[in-house]
Image (cartoon, rainbow, N blue to C red; front, side, top):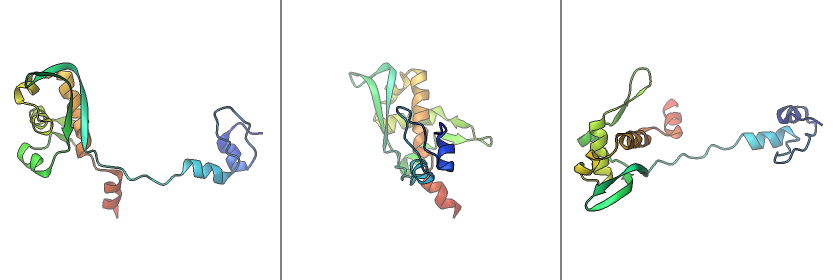
Length: 143
């Protein structure tokens, strides 16, 4: 009996049974477990941001905000809230991030201004997901 799942799969030897482990006694079983069809990555339609400090919004106290996916018009009118510099680092423009929170979350500017700085940074980082290409986009562009 072999205790190494990869070694067992390659050699064809039976693997020692370990509770909670999948018995991969053949190369085919191992390949089917490890190699799976890539799943289509869905585009993010909205994001929720839990606020560490609740904010006043139109007479209510809000602990969570939801931002919808931005449209082309949103980008053209407000600008890109995140860019990647030559080293690949993310650089956020917080004036644009605030304008995006206002528009995409229907949060009044005065309420956005009252957000805790940590919550605005959290929103900026989560918002970045709207602008990242999917794996499918990258693979399509390489063809």
